[in-house]
Image (tube, rainbow, N blue to C red):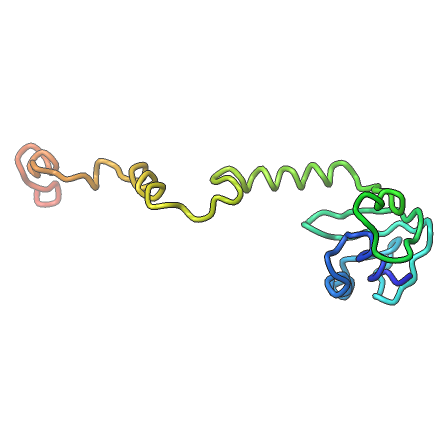
Length: 145
């Protein structure tokens, strides 16, 4: 089976064309060599795939006849990706979620007002007594000679 069809059939990519595009971008390799879409996959091959800024490694156990259900994927491949790769992915996800939870979208008017409250400081506040702001005698420090 061709590698682009294999990656699509084990549900690693959503469509076969996306799989072929990723192969063209040199993000898929078997062993230490980059492959083309027409490369035949054999049982026992270890495929390295660069996706989501980490490098997945999967070992081919069995070649499926066509696209398979998600529950049947473990019968055909074995994930041999390093644990530190998954830790890097989790750290990236956690660092992106510090501000807003996923799916909350843009800030609302109330959120923007709350943010403006944090940004404001005493310098931008309304002053009624400008003499106190500039000094005791009401003159700038620059005008003194």
